[in-house]
Length: 167
Image (cartoon, rainbow, N blue to C red):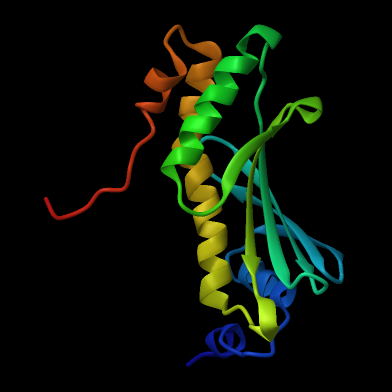
């Protein structure tokens, strides 16, 4: 087991320290905003996603917020919200919402570690990967819902689902 694996499996590791280690290992741009918060950018196919992870010892939750920009005309907001509702029906962990003032779509997820539980590096890595994967999957659908001629449900039809089985 190399040093990275040892650190990422240590039970007493601080969740934000684990995120910082993962960010360094993956060469993601990051900034340790505070002792309990880190911000980073992860390059996707469609754009760079801004992620912020914050550890709240009070409620023992590691919160992830992943944002990306989207221009939405006032008359297209209802279509976007309908597409977001449809996307949320398709995902198990986390959810999308909007920050209209900032012109952003937000994916949020909280990992509850109640009772003194600790997060493993694998859990946090999967949490980050799932957030970016959800954004990558639904970004084109959100764009089509806002700028296309079809319905939000038709736009969601282009969101690729996970493939099962073998070819």
